[in-house]
Amino acid sequence: MAKPEKDPFRCSECGWSTTKWVGRCGECQAWGSVEEVAAPKRLSLVPGKVTHNATPIGSVDLNAAKARPTGIEELDRVLGGGLVPGAAILLAGEPGVGKSTLLLSVAAESAARDVPALYISGEESASQVRMRAERISAIHPKLWLAAENDLSAVISHIDAVKPELLIIDSIQTISTSTSDGTSGGVTQVREVAAALIRIAKERDITLLLVGHVTKDGSIAGPRLLEHIVDVVLSFEGERHSRLRLIRATKNRFGASDEVGCFDLHDAGIASVADPTGLFTSRHTEPVPGTCVTVTLEGRRPLLAEIQALVSQGRDNDYGNARRVTSGLDASRTSMTLAVLELRAHIRVAGRDVYAATVGGMKMTEPAADLALALAVASAAQNLALPADLVAIGEVGLAGEIRKVSGVTRRLQEAHRLGFKRAIVPTGSEAKIEGMEILEVSRLDQALKRVKITQE
Image (tube, rainbow, N blue to C red):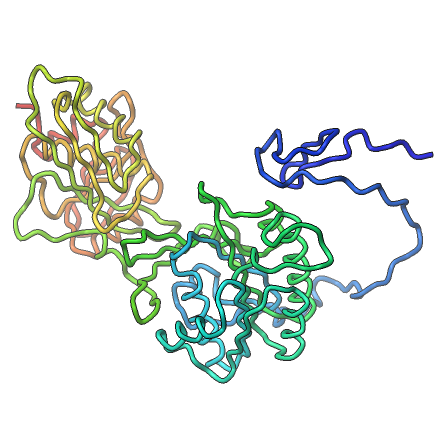
């Protein structure tokens, strides 16, 4: 007689096991992920049915995996060329960021390229999707639309339409009667996704799945979902800004560090090939408290402007100074301010400091530390930096300027946009014709180079 399972309940997310069912995993703290483990099946030695014969790897046809352009340049850039037949792509993002608008545009562009597309909406009615399609001019005879929540009905539509592109909006709204749990639950999402991916692989259908995100920004549902798909895309953007970014966190067909930029407007969504102008502002006269840096979003260099405002403060007020940031990491900003005061002798204690990026850009890269320090020092001393200057470098706690990656690529982008001078860490070994490059090893040295020192 087979011995019973020691821990018959196991978390589908992390594998943690327990002797009794609980609503929340004791290891990864995921809700609804603890399930009863089925009894192990007896190993069968009977040969199974072979679906595809093994062939030499050099004889495999590459044309079957050739990417088709989507018609949206920035999305093709992130995907590595376009949509691959049989690929499963997961696009996740916060509500209202523009996921449905983007995928409806992709479906319409594909239909215009003679690729039949089927759009399954589980969140909206067909008339609601039609209204959006009218607004963004996404009407085409080869674009099919259905509003369904049942997996068997979705499969029936696939059999009838025979699409080459299938969009499911969203995977959390589709359920199947063959599996327990409610729609959007761990079990349902896993079973539905596995079934759709299996159909896509067998019929060479490109599958685009829309995924929800949790409060902390991670993809809702089982972690298995990210493992079984070929591409995982993250759609980001501020609700009050038109700029949208798509990042590839997993890509079996291209680079996993590419970023695509989009402009979301009333008439739909459009690619932004050169988004640098969105993150900088040109001033007619030099203004204290501004400094431009070059950040790397994936492989793409983007110029970004950091602005700072420092109040006069009072000599006896050291405990009530405010530190307000927008688009910058608050902890790293506080660290940079401390280094600026103790190592470069720029007084900011007892003075309110406001630091922000232009255009709603979020910067967490350490390479922006030097530009932040120069902007704050410029505001504190009321001395403007040269308008044609960019600053790149990480600031250490000892006041040293550390090297960062991709300095040459960053400076080439800055020179292309008209910047003539740059401050970079010592040892960067970057040479750009027509650009004056100043190498510094410490923060106080950088301030002397731009003639900003403590009075």
